Image (cartoon, rainbow, N blue to C red; front, top):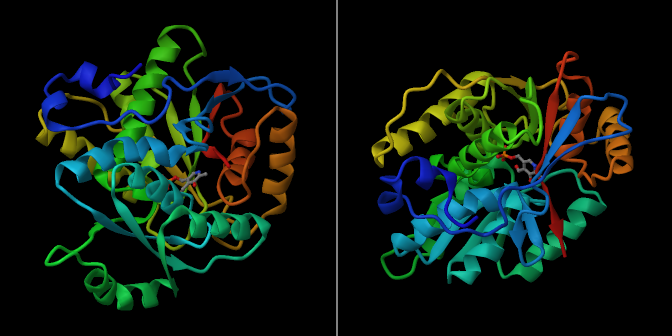
Length: 323
Ligand SMILES: Cc1ncc(COP(=O)(O)O)c(C=O)c1O
């Protein structure tokens, strides 16, 4: 399917909101077996993308990159932790369109997963600045903008995780896709949809997309990052900003407030710190055929194993393939 759901549903957006398909939609849904609960489903975005790199960031880039291209942007400046999936995806997909990516990297607990990710980043063509902490990154920002200006043109800034309101539309799209899959009988309407939250765009977009699709599912946003404001109120506000973009660009709709709750119950000692619960959950997932990462999806899966005992529960797998 090449035309996005948002364009089909709101034809006015075709002219105002450019889209670039980077993966095969819809992504598959399936019931998970051997997890200890018999009402656990998965929508698997791990295979979304092309060129051996996928996961949830690709959906955000489908809206962000064409918007940048339309504005003639040649360099973007963004931020992430040393294992950033977002920074890597932005670099790999951006370079296909001639857009260079500069990333200011803050430290995170180092393990083999992070070291491997850093090796990929170094190979990707991204320009890396090791600014180490949030305060140092903010202090370095003016220099970074000037250092990477092309003539008088400063780099365009993209927030951590690509969770600008336009990036959030990637998961509005996924929510609409899910609505179709429920309607087609591929899965029951989930009582609860569980996803990991690093910068908020995925959960916020999904909740908005579900509301637009008429689903009554509650999104359980499992916070794995303590350095950004990601409480229910913050994520709801982000969903509201994405809805405002859609309305400004010509979509008219009247929907109930997105159903979304944020929890820090699975954060452990903080971003990138493993938890025993998440390690155990990743093993359960592996037996059910899902390969998860320790920073995001294993913590979300731990939440999915116990969420909404009266189910059905849908786990969103946001961890992509990597080569
Ligand atoms: C694998 C994975 N899952 C989930 C997330 C969380 O998505 P978001 O940043 O939209 O909250 C991220 C990135 O932050 C990620 O890399």
